[in-house]
Length: 179
Image (cartoon, rainbow, N blue to C red; front, top):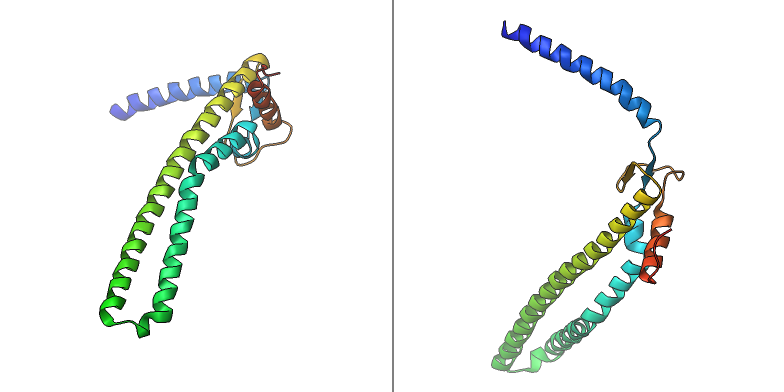
């Protein structure tokens, strides 16, 4: 008896679905659909390039300090390798301890640098994507799109509006409104 009720409900749901499917396919023919390549936005937009430049400027001092520290490590290591045999065992051990301590500091600072850089990069890219999404929404409303997708396996050039979004982002950066 329970299976009979389930079958009736399934039959009703299926008939409703099929009925809606016909209506949906009729209006889907009129739907305006577009696609945007988010990777291109993050690579090519002026906002993304400005964010990258900002990050380089923000992290350049720390990067230089790490490069200097790496050079000191190499010099210390080369010095121990070259002169280690002629040093007293206590001096050689002290230099090796100093080298190990500097190496540990270098590894820690390098890890912190990467973590901070990745966090800031993610923040900056999220801001770029937020601006891009606002522009995409404006374009969708102005040009009456029903659906705009950002991630797809394949996108025909006919529906790709990435160039239009890039231009609108550039115009917004300059203080103008999108097309």
